[in-house]
Image: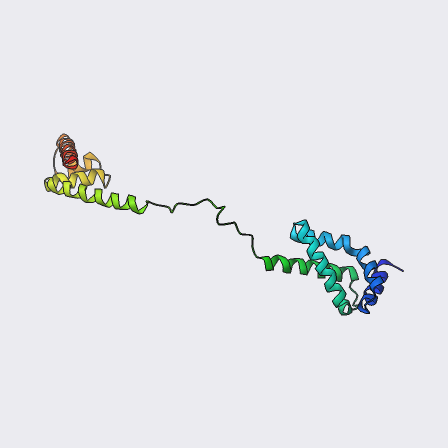
Length: 180
């Protein structure tokens, strides 16, 4: 009798609740089915637990195996693999313990830093308002918009050295204003 015929015979006997045939089926197939469970679940203890459940399922469903041209080992492997995958899905994705996860700061400034920056922006804006309008525009153009001294001199129709002087004196005035 070939292995295939022998397994078919054992499955037919298990379907009739033959405990001897079930023991023999277990001895003949458990190593292979355990390997399948272990490959799917990775964890040895979980694979052992699932293997036990697989054999309970085989005991209860052996009558569902039909000689259809498929190998009985293929049927047994399918039962084991599907049950292991079902267990994996039921457990869901692994999640980290929230207490073990390092706290992460939100990107960007903190509320305190935002409030300080807003207050500083109001102070700077107030000090810029104290400068003559053309000087304030030159400071904004140079330091906030990135315009060159040459571009600013042409825009305000003044010589380049005059623009440099405006900016230097304006910065000194701003510094004095902000220190009050």
